[in-house]
Amino acid sequence: MNIFKAVSLKVASTMAFALMGAQGRYLGSAIPLGEIVFCRGLFALIPIVLFFGWRGQLRGALQTDRFSAHLVRGSFSVIGTFCTFGALARLPIADVTAIAFIAPLITVVFAALFLKEKVHVYRWSAVGVGFSGVILMLSPYFHNHAALDGAMMVGLFLALMNAFTAGGATIQIRRLTATESSASIVIIMTLIVMAASLVTAPFGWRWPTGFELALLIGIGIAGGLGQMLFTESYRYAPASFLAPFDYTAMLWAFMLGFWMFGEVPTIYVVIGAVIVAAAGIFVILRERHLGLKRLRDTPMSPISAMADDEADPDAPVTVLGKKR
Image (cartoon, rainbow, N blue to C red; front, top):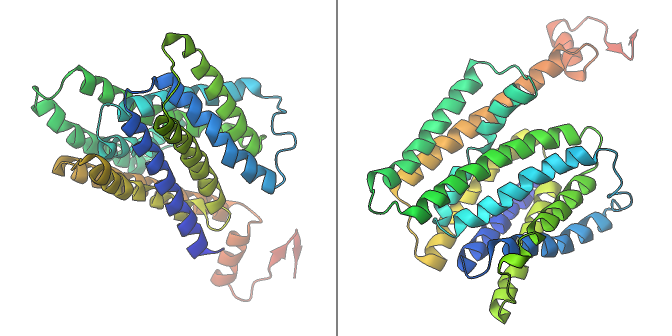
């Protein structure tokens, strides 16, 4: 446990992802979408390979007996990556980031539908509250019909699709982590995204200018570095403690959007983002509470043993099936 290091790494990862998004928005429609996605994967491999190589986890990263499961996870990532950069080309960074906050809530829905997890009224209530925050964020678009042109409608659809695919990817990662290493999951996913984006090459890819190439490299490096910082942060603190710090991404989105593009988020986006973030944090804390409860209820668990000690200080302690 190293709380300071864990939080620092997690916040740095959100900043790296925000920088990736800002560079993607700057390129906008100047570079074909598939080309941006390909470069995102290609140059992300630099920090990814260095990171897992440093940890000695590259050996066997491409060996798997569950390629079909990796393909499902990669398909979510392909759709999500295209949707992310497609939305950034049409909407302010803060709006895209805020809409993405519903991903943990969508994960709850998908866990109930596909993993058959039992979801009680507390988490369903949080999901409902979170989606009301999304409706609030989107309300200015629908009130101002003159501003809601075709590009914005496409952008909103892509931003929502990105959130849904993120929820789906989370569910699939839960399934993969039972047998697959982090290196295998990340590298195979990146290669699948690159392969899928190559399909778009005949439809208008072009050689970028020097500045555009620098931004494309920056998108990949920032994305890969963000993934590594994100992964490394969980070595020093529990996931339930770190997860709420994902929402610092909104601060970076506000600052980068204003500094680079003069974008000022509406009050609807700010309040809606707070509502969605609060609902997401509630879900995270609820998951932690339920996880601890399951652990306490598990026979032979250290927590249940400590609970027994506190209930009866004179009771014998069971250790590995023996009493002492």
